[in-house]
Length: 373
Image 1 (spheres, helix red, strand yellow):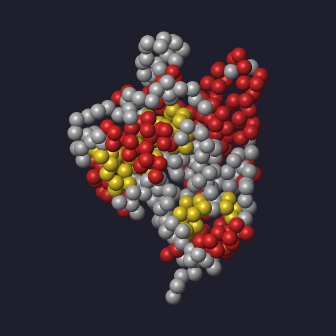
Image 2 (image 1 turned 180 degrees about the horizontal axis):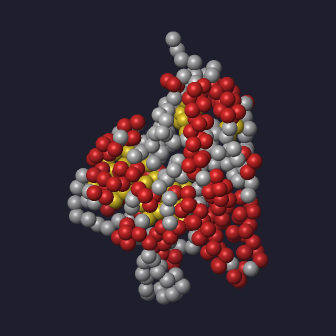
């Protein structure tokens, strides 16, 4: 589809769920948005660097159904979650945070720090049940402060019913936070439409932007109620006031900025965002799903540990094998990049994969997934 626009470290690259392939335009983006202004116009470097930050925000916004002013760059997802957690207003009786057993561990690690403020973490059971809005019922009780929903669960590839979770959370006065790290760039994300309070994501995976270019999103109403504890001069309403005795929160998502942004990762990430924006996430989603259909048709259904349900899955798959070490050796010999979870082969589809990649994967795995009689 768009293979020529990316560096492909293996002949068959199925690791977008971990690290998206690097765009060939990445070096130029780093130079234009970060290095060149510093090298050539050091005394005026702030203006082009600020332009890079705004370009990054606009690129993210266009890919996740948001407005650029509601996006705030973050170094990683964990930092974004922590800043949101410690910004929430105290509300009498709202003492619980609801998440799931299938969330990525960093989500739980960050949220567990809420116990310092008296929060109790409630973990919903995982699996395909999380696609059912009613499975989330405990998140809408009167004692819940925050519900955290992962749009695409990294191991099961199950899609959470984000729109309905957000709607019910609003009805019951519960703050909602979406983790779209495994969705953005490969599955349609509609933050404005869904009406969440907050969201976090990263450019590392399907956005093909590299590490250090994560972000949080906050709708205007939720941001106005939030008072982050981790602040810096760019969290200030007027960063250039330079009065050490006066701090006033910036409006909107900018109050989560903290100190000076790491501009270089944001500049590089814009390369991936531009490629994906040109293709369109809806088109990428349809393309990736067709490749998954081809994979599911080539192997026995029972070997897939992740969901195979059409219309209810992300872009990744988890494939059980008899002997992972043996399968990994054969996959490596065939030039197939993958990783593993639960002793299974984990792969994902993206816009630079094609039918030949899928056929190569199926050919290698056919002998490793044969079911016992």
